[in-house]
Length: 161
Image 1 (cartoon, rainbow, N blue to C red):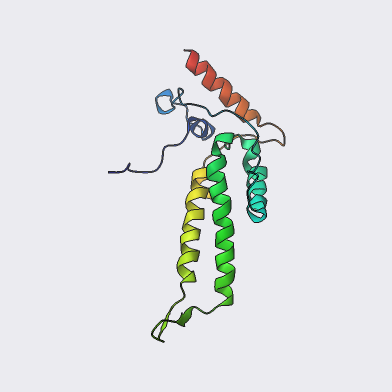
Image 2: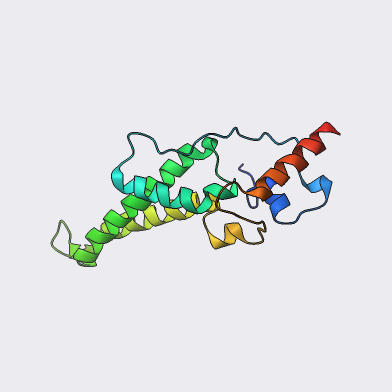
């Protein structure tokens, strides 16, 4: 049986959301190493545009790390597939002729819906939806996020005790 309820928030997000009770924050949580959030070399150009947009928007927050590259890639590719399928669907009819000549629902509906679901799930995992960002506080500046530095110091101090 799978896990129940919403996915647990990382310690960094709990602290950014204002959690102050030490029993609710896992200060021993592994923190992924930093590193550049450069797109994979074999990423399609359309997906690279999505990648750059997301990294520009969330990169300074410290929420995305080099460990998130694979899920970010999946998100970018799903966005591109969704746009391509939606473009094809908008050029066609909602009903198409089936094998027996009767009208059936256009199969592109399912492809669009599947990719929209994938985009939504990946976006939630990456903190790209308003609901995923709800309650986050922190001062963001153009260079390094000073809130991230404060959080790292808090977590390091808590690990020492």
